[in-house]
Image (cartoon, rainbow, N blue to C red; front, side):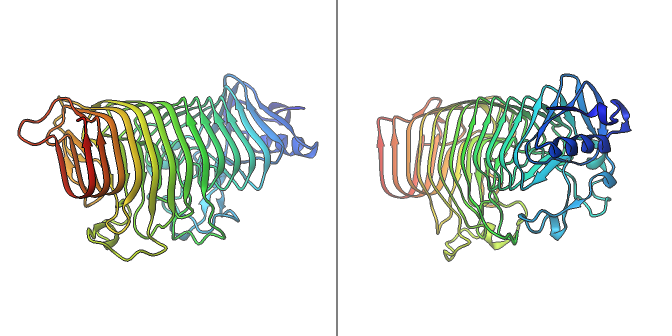
Amino acid sequence: MMYDITQFGAVGDGSTFAGSAIHSAIDAAAGAGGGTVVVPAGRFLTGSITLKSNITLHLEPGAVLLGTGNPDHFPLWRSKWEGTAVDGQPGRAPMIGGEGLRNIAITGRGTIDGAGKWWWQNMKTMSPPNVRPTLIRFVDCYNVRIEGITVTNSPSWTITPLACDNVTITGITVINPPDSPNTDGINPDSCRNVRISDCHIDVGDDCITIKSGKETDNRQRYQACENITITNCTLLHGHGGVVIGSEITGSVRNVVISNCVFIGTDRGIRIKARRGRGGVVEDIRASNLIMDGVLCPIVVNLFYGCGAWGDKKVTETGPMPVNEGTPQFRRFRFSNITARRVKFAAAYILGLPEMFAQDMIISDCSLHLDPDNTESGTAAMASVAKVQCRGGFTAQNVDQLILRNVDVAHQVGPAFSIENGRSIELRGITARTPDESVEPVELRNIVDSSVINT
């Protein structure tokens, strides 16, 4: 059954508060056992909206749900599952959300506009400081679908399912300004069985990020983020295209990324963690990707520094004791990746000296640096990372690294540089435009290596 919000008093003039009418429509649908709450064409001003089980929120073409930018309309919310939030404070309720629900959906060709500008401008002076609502957040829900809609101007992270199972996000458009802070596109956290497909994401932070909690969360339980597919997406201007971490305490496994285009993202595939986080990232597949104008196409970083700059766990280059806080990366497969106009490095892989990044195969990749680039920087956000401009393929602290049919062009310095490694195989690699001042392949402190048909 359909429940049109205008039949419950909502006025789509962009200035009359419609939140109460929307909740009345949701309550009516829930009281009947479920149904579809319809938002017709118009601009409907609202604060936080809480869905209920067996409810579809459907936005018709021309419909806009517009956030008020008023903190009073986004009450503080601490979910039962998550534990503490930002700086020990509860977070603000999302614009659309719910907890412990089943069979919920947001569909249609309308728009959800979070009116994020007010939050971005006032995030340091608000009380509590920097506690901004996400746009869509579901916690501990089953059978979630988000389809067709456009979401824009999120105050913080945009779509953030947490501890959910059976999640489909398809055919949506996410647009946040490139300078908007922490406006990640889609962030499944500790979820399982997630499908993200046919999406267009252009944001001010990471486009898609997979997480599983961090060591300081004091959660009731840790849960892996697993069985994730990402396909047929266009990813623009974010800090990372598809990112795993750095919060991986519950582990991340069984992730497939395919048939995507990355334009102007800082990094393409970005996998990051640091000592203390613990967790295992394993069985990651990325294939059939096109990248243009990225700083670095592939970054694997176990010295991630943000939030811990100057801490020994991200500065100590010698081995440290292995314990439950030691993160592990293993069984990565990257193939059929074409990258053009790369700025900083063809690839940057940085394992720990006490826990090498293990069992990685990178094959059939064409990684071409931008011959006109003069900007330099670090491909990985790590205090121990090298500053590079048009660097080649760099790897350090790796075990069972295989490069097959990898083509690097227009680099400055070695095309391939590997340090502190075991069981290294280079087969059919190509330095298409070698730097005459150095050897194209640089191997240092390597045990058991083979270089074939280079």
